[in-house]
Image 1 (cartoon, helix red, strand yellow):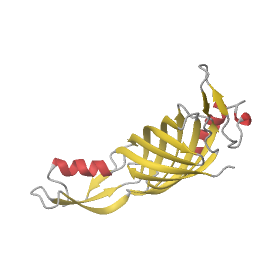
Image 2: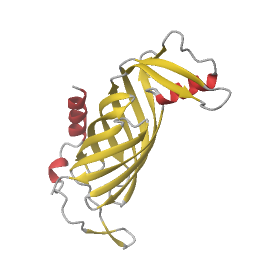
Image 3: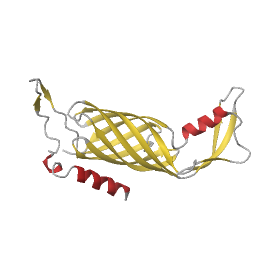
Image 4: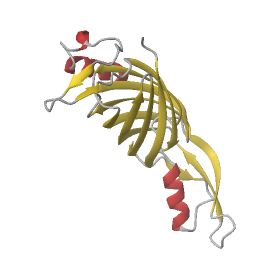
Amino acid sequence: MILRRLLLSGALLGLGTIAAQAQEAPSPDYTSAAGVSRKVISYPRTSLGLTAGWGAPYGWGLDFSQLLLPNLDVTAGAGLGVGWKIGVGTRFYFAPQRRVSPFVGANVARTSGLTHFNLTVNEGTYQEEQVRINIRPTATVHLRGGVRCQFRRVGLIGALGYGVVLGADPVTYVYGYEPQYQITRDVVNAIAPGSFELSAGVTFGLSK
């Protein structure tokens, strides 16, 4: 349902322009107002990507993207994070005609959660302690920005962002394994859904 709404919203924004987009035609010469000629970069209309990093919306996994406008795509993906993750998202590119373009985006992801997950923090120090936590299934909204560098059908993507949990704190401590130190709580919060993002990915164009 969420993916359908995103696709519909993008389609409405692009009404009247989508049909005019070529299927990854050879990059034409573009002459600016100053008379400088350069190549126009065309993103593949459909792409398959690999994602990885800390706090990534789809975790360490795969995503599929569909370009709706020259500077707008929607994605759907799944992977492994703190439990299994699945979600949808969208990205807006500020300069898709250039090889390197900044972008902003948003994702909605669902995490399966974990039960009786053991974690040792500050191992080998006087603050070493072991905690056991449960992480309930959680929905998270990710707000993110980054850059995309495109080389023909292969693109490299880097992103920074933050995930906001929808609902109550998903982490609970198993009785008898509650942390004594604040630094341990900080580490648990950093790995739980709703933490900051530092991620990277590579996309492979599927369209001709």
